[in-house]
Length: 528
Image (spheres, one colour):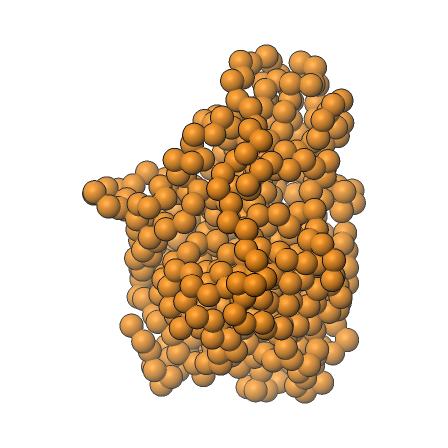
């Protein structure tokens, strides 16, 4: 339902960061003009230091998120029910950590969909704050995309100390998200997308995998079953006793948005988690494995590599990107992954000796953040998989298809209030009421995206795209395939060809450094 402004004021719902600022002094510490603008480990932000005793790396086994089972199915759809609620997990050995989880777990349950078959997920909100669910990489109608003001209010009601000057579609207690799944096999993920509070709510645990399968993918002789493993990589910091540390101005997340000044460029943790476990290990056979790698960190980038590398051949054979299968496999000795990026890769352990230990390292890290997880080649196995030279039908877009060219600059600057410098797109703060692009349904557009100040990973909802050029040259080594997020260094520029097929309506594009997104680095487009 559409809620007019006066009803929003009664509910006390929080608005966009750019719209809150005029309320005066309460917003001043959000964006100090000096502020922290630090690059640490090649990521924008500052590191939070844990006060809890962190475990020795590679002493905790890798957990695999459970696969959700539909509560019912019919001829056209599978139906799921997920409850967003507080849970308690043993992330650090011997300690209990409060998480905000889908079904109370972190990561949330993995949803597996079939291309061409509808998936309907009812999310019930038993937390004490509003939520929004965004299926990242999904081609969905705008009302189910997870627009940041289309809130699901808590079942117990909602009363906030702040006010709003915009409106949105509000669901009370629960919302049914209808996903047509009109797209090919791909590794997607779902996460919270609440206006102003995406960063802390994802940090607390509101994230999970959503995998799409189709006939084309299943015909390929790639590793399957227990050798097809999702890996959600993220960083967190922990207080004594095991609770997560996040520098919110309002730790309850029910009132004032934003982070403490030193962290407005990004929140980096000092403990690396994979599927919710700190620096885990996984026993493998001396065979090929498929790993669906997701960077679910708020602000940290990773450059992953194997130590030791295989004696022959590449460390990683990439078979898929954000939007699905590549046309042909690519070989990498290392892969840089920005926030929200996904890489489907094959690792072949047949060249390692039984008992050998292989560490997945992060060459952008330092100390504990330089290590991610470990594989132990524990035993021999039979392997009938291989990586074919051709993976799937791949439509390569051409610049001649582009009917429109648009330019967008992401930077800290271009807007100031009360001596504060803000995160902006084309010098403007996010305003849910302003539309800055009107692509036509089915059209291909050429978008020139620039970044200033610090690195920014730019995510476009609905539209998949292909990287045409980077810094006026060829695409980078990690730009292949259909993407929904492009990673740019400070001062970087990329041209992408985006295809706006699927649905009409209003969508957003934004920086996927979640602290930047929460602080107004977001914009609207409307497919017409």
